[in-house]
Image (cartoon, rainbow, N blue to C red; front, side, top):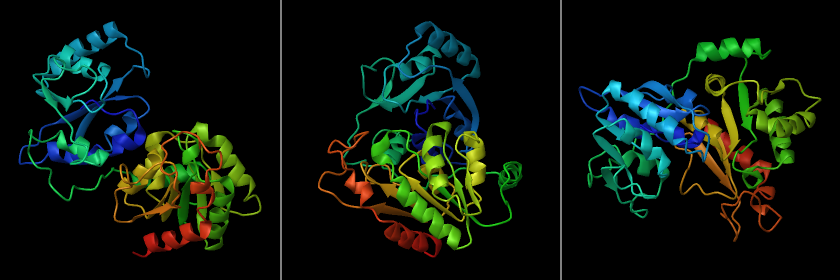
Length: 334
């Protein structure tokens, strides 16, 4: 499988892998993925190996792709499923001479893909469905309901890491994920996260602020608003992606922007409240029966912009913490 480039999209490949490995003699599935999502590959049930794809976004590096493809010929793969829609993403399976190369038609890929499918977006409105359909034969109906995405976690490793980070691994915790790689239009305001953190701490929960190093400023701002409270910890940039999976698996609750970590939380089957503003849960919702979606409807949303084009961001500004807390209670006690 040639994997997508975003953390959340990587999680959404899990039902496709489930379909590929169904049957009495499941084939091994290896995943070619960029370094920043590769740690999730082997956390997906059914995946055997992750293969690093060392190409920066937008870089062709044709010779390097050719050499990697030739090196993969020795593995004797019988099929490649190419999930990104770019021309570049289909090159390595072709260079590897993989007999069957499946993907959606896009960006001049005829010839590179010899099992090219035409997407009907109305029949497959969810991204997870579009991935899963590529595991099947052409025109084969998608089984419904699809299995929910699942990730494998190591709770013992998570508890050991919590101790190393100075956290109380034996006490209940809530995880807040205030970042969003796509842009600020997907980020709930800091003051709302502070209100939630204080409310959850008042209920006796530790509060762990999680994200990448790029989220460090927003997590610092939230921590500053909780400076008088014990048990609030800023973990942004202090874990890698695999460690974040193991830590999040310990959470009693996750409150998160629409981000890659939202999909991780859902795939770990953690009670989750997902905050949507500029984006839409109609395409990439958190896929878990224990997840709840929080939205404040506006005529201009979803706009799918990185920053609010109207400069008010009311879709998230007006999404009140009390409404999110009510959904958290539902997620905790379905």
